[in-house]
Length: 499
Ligand code: CS2
Image (cartoon, helix red, strand yellow):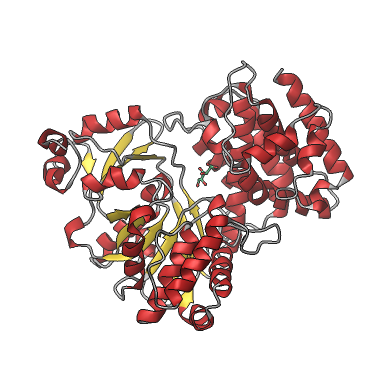
């Protein structure tokens, strides 16, 4: 790399000059002073705009320098390549409706790519100075069977079980991890053998009881590898607090990078964009030390479940509804789908008629107001959050976001018509593969092939064929005659709107 490129990038070498520019804030702590205390799996934009910010703010509020982050990428080395030359530095461009601000972040100290750096990650997880792992590996990062157990039929999982056996037998040279949870389990095995020091695994993905899900899968990996001693240790020294995370973080565009470059004076390949709002509710269940996240605005509580369910059902479900209906009508962004009118009424109806009746309000929250505040956030015209981004991975998202609501309404003797509309909009999105203007809509989903196969056939039978996909729709939902009729009718109507 030439000297010109180096001086043109955000890095420790350019930080002093960058931090002095008008409109630039941060880092809140001196990155050089931080030691690594957290390993984060899934170092995508969401983590960098959410937990990394809370963690840095907590360090700044307390002067506690133990909480630098080692970020671990997924299957692509891209973020390691972006942040490596920048010494882990990146910035967050926060976009309100009428203003923007830019903050340089220093809490990400290193980024590792499992393809080449598995050993480094294992060693770090075993270090006594490291106390936590956190995860944002998206819904599809949790390999589960229909019944919710670990999917041992998944080739990556099977390979990681073998690698875990090698780790436990002291041969520890099993090569690159294939899955984030496999890598985590191997690191925990290394820690168990090294010191057995207490540890917490903090899941930050949009799942119900995300801590319990993560715990179940890590325990199942250890069980499959025959790791009895480790299992006992996991049960006593390692906690898996559940969390609810919330911040809208659209994919960064080249236009965002150019905008940030004007402010920073240097290029930031690791830039992330976010809305001003942020929320993090964390189950207060840690066996060892943790950052004082409550000093940074997070809520530590004994009952995170009520927050999790309210957020997933209210925010994420209406997001998905606007994404599928909006994409089908040809709106590139969520804000445009909201601004166009009509669709936002559908979102309101979904909240009011189907979702709110199933919820217990978290302490101090009025659910109707919460719903309005969510729609107001979606309307932010500066975010550029695309409908196609939110539409991705529907097979993984629908069960979490809407099918719980549907099941609850059906057992209360009600037919959730807006819930049926959301399911139908997803079906038509899968089936048509194009919007009302004839422009292609790409199906980005781990089940894409199976979904296309299941969808293929007559328009009249589409709802029945997709409702039969058992990985997504449980029998009590799929086989409910009136719900099926409501989905079928909504599919028919939407198909006529997208000829
Ligand atoms: C969105 C979420 O992409 C999606 O499916 O619904 O990422 C959403 O923006 C966040 O959960 C907000 O906290």
